[in-house]
Length: 248
Image (cartoon, rainbow, N blue to C red; front, side):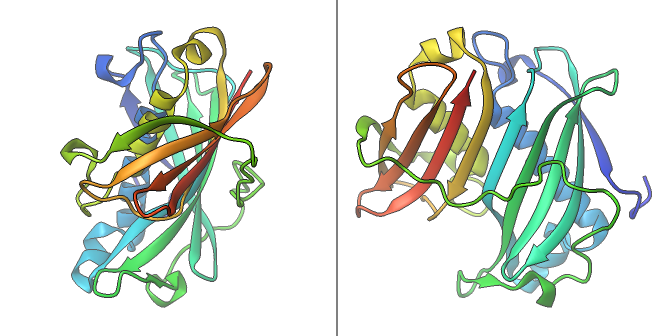
């Protein structure tokens, strides 16, 4: 694959442990595919882990929107297309498309990323670190940017969660895909049995580390189609993430 032959394509075969009890691919599994594709694509373009780690810097996902018109089941092959499209101030944007074996697009995603300095734990403007962060002519997989989520005032407690060893990634904080599992576990299983999760947005506000305790608060839909809006608050009463899940 040519380095500049964008979009980059990566194939993933859905494994037994990557689907839920209804044989639908988990959002966390899809996000793991996205993370792997983004990592390899960034390395090929010269601003990935291999290039940033020696500089004491690393990428973190800031926000994500995923839109689906169907799902994938065990044994299917998912092709992930990805390309970096622009950067603005501290944010770098990357888009994705998901295709089946016949080349049909069944889902799209847009993401916002930050480059963090390991010494200061503060974001670094991507234009100062990488020489190439966008391409022309590929368009947008999703035209809107993942903006702030408005959480209703009337919320109910949906459970508590302590961050454990298996939640952590190589940067010693909760991996971005694990949030989708935490959110899914906080909702009634009936939602996933009766309805289709057609869209999810997650905004990552503050890192979660080993031993942190979070309380999930949410506003659930009165009818369907409808959205569930949730946020996670840590033991210091700080919001750590917000999410919106649309069920149809």
